[in-house]
Image (cartoon, rainbow, N blue to C red; front, side, top):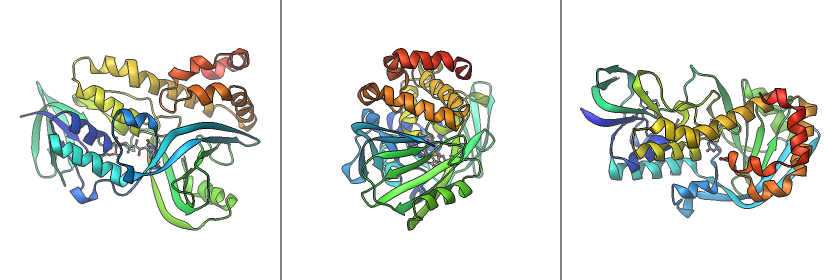
Length: 344
Ligand SMILES: Cc1cc2nc3c(=O)[nH]c(=O)nc-3n(C[C@H](O)[C@H](O)[C@H](O)COP(=O)(O)OP(=O)(O)OC[C@H]3O[C@@H](n4cnc5c(N)ncnc54)[C@H](O)[C@@H]3O)c2cc1C
């Protein structure tokens, strides 16, 4: 019997296995890990707390964001706030780190697992394993609420700022993005229930740039949890640990893995106090944003303009609780009072 088995050698499962010795079961062959790319590769510099990113796969450094509502716009400048990374190389890099500490069985697809007494039995297409602790890091699942993310790499000249576009006509229920991976190439995408029509229209608005590549995948859109049925600990997208505000799952996924690698005892409590609390706040912000019509989005961007200096100083893509309380000034308080019921 194994002490700990992890399902999935994606970035989160691999990161966990690089910190704590375990057995990882991965459905892909070793050469297939990190492919196909289903990610924009935008990570805040908070990633430095977990991984020293080799310079060779940081493709761009981002110095702020331009937020667009249907009739309003705000620039938030913040030097070196995020990196745009080569996601395939990132996943393979974390896998190499995992292999220094743990064993990974490739081409081993888990079909089901169940709890028996004090162990969990895992059935794959070829084998049956037993483990005391099971960590499920097998990515997003389509039996839970999700959005479909679709993006292209396109020839488009941009400064190193991320551009976000909100509005019913652009992307209902989420937003469209332009993330420059270099001066000449951007990752342009959006996430919604039927993304292709919206993306076609969005690209048309950008003058139909030359498309180099298509990418896409599932973004979990449900309340996050640290524990699933059959006694499994959930990490990464499996537990809905991608931020519901932006869909970004790498930084908080790695943070959750780090907390779990320190021990199973009291994990849920520790996770809830840190990552879980932040994710739940992202979830509330997402629910609030989804209740706003285009006019109300314009009003929100107007408010963001009023707190721009504070956002430029304290804003954090991952941990909203760190800066929300710093934004409490009369215009924000008045806005909160007027929108109180939407925030519930
Ligand atoms: C369009 C799009 C854009 C995104 N952009 C960003 C971004 O800019 N920044 C960011 O931080 N995040 C982004 N994300 C989210 C990010 O990609 C995920 O949060 C991240 O991949 C989660 O990592 P994970 O290890 O939990 O899951 P995954 O990366 O999905 O890895 C899961 C692993 O488990 C394996 N597996 C699955 N099922 C089984 C099974 N039954 N048996 C064995 N192995 C199995 C898979 O093969 C895979 O290797 C984006 C997502 C999408 C769809």
